[in-house]
Image (cartoon, rainbow, N blue to C red; front, side, top):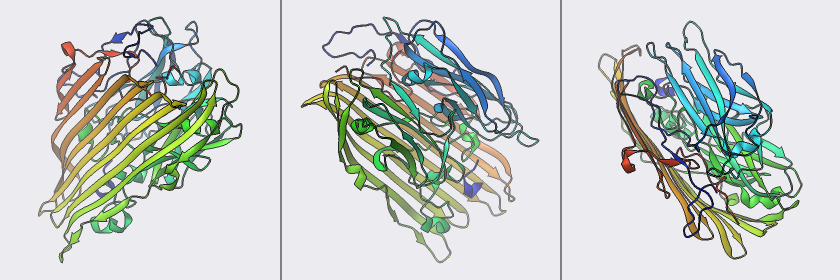
Length: 590
């Protein structure tokens, strides 16, 4: 749709000996030979250890033609042991040729989200199909018991919207072995949503909440929250909106363009999750995303919030309410979150408390400025700026069987946005430059000794140049240039020793021009081209690189492995080249 204006796995411990070997595999992106008009992306699959997996089919070739859920039952794989080195969700989707909107797609089990993404829009001549994967290893405890799940892809099929969506999904379990030991996974997974099978919660405004009151075990020693917040409806193009006081002058959606997910425990701010500016396959100009979609469009990555400073509080035997809201939400965001909890295996009771929280005194209130000028003819030029930067420290301790563990989360979160406008009788041009960033460290101490440290830097650059030119006869063109980026740098230390680091980069650049007649009917488009570059490397020598180019709706170039040793992708089975969270499952061995 157009915007409203246009309608501790196998770590190489430096100086320490490894107790088991590391397996590797040659990761591959979606195949897409030159000339293909089918969905082609550069994203890596989820790496796995060697050996055949146990497979559980969740559903097979289900048809999505309405807004009813598609339920399924789940039973853990027989004869595959109770502990797995890796668990991977694989799903395949397709939509028949015709007309159809992009649709939100979610998969659930026992109230917990196991996949979140959107679908590709078809065309009259192309029936796209695509494949997605998600690393669910950290959800192994959820998957160790039978349960009920459901697939939700709300869709309308009638004489106008003819595209029928089909889908299949399965879980692959890789048994633990000497080469690929069982993952150190959370002991429990709790969904925040109220649906026992699973569904998203609608957050209409900044005060709307996804909340769950939980009575947790009394021996919690670490906790994390995996967060998804997806823009919908009037908020779909939140990144182009402006503060209400400027909306009429620049002819844009109001409500501002600052969005950020806020996490709280018992009403106290507990963490922040940045909002990625995903653009769906019908977004702005659908031709921009055929056949290569925007960053993560088909397969969102969750953001993991470290709540470990609250471990002692969560273990006190009282019910606690964990909640999520979206600052700036303006009808609306779809939200889901899962609480991942690690328990002390040698203690029935963990004591402790929160000792410092500077986030509590820093509300998410951005600074707004402008350089707009309007002349006597009503022509408007200038910029609107929105900025917010917060540095906060949250610190707490837990009295565990290992002693008192003091955990500190130290983060700086930033949002910087400039909207530039040129508006006159023949031009409406809006240029958006936005940067969301996180720079943080989670550090655990016993006494004066730092036993574990996890650092992460994230940045989400977005550039949009939307340029409408109006001819004398009333016809007009709409030219769009889009640049999306996802940058992640993570690093782990144990006892002051750097043991692992990794970098992920995912960049998509797209351009296209739409032609409209004086009645606003689309008559043609031209100049479509795009590139995607995906790069991953880590301190163990793991490397993945893939590049895709498109021209006029078909793949014009495709390369995989160029830039890696021997021009070959090679990543370790325990790594996260897709940018999915890893700080919860690489566990300090103290």
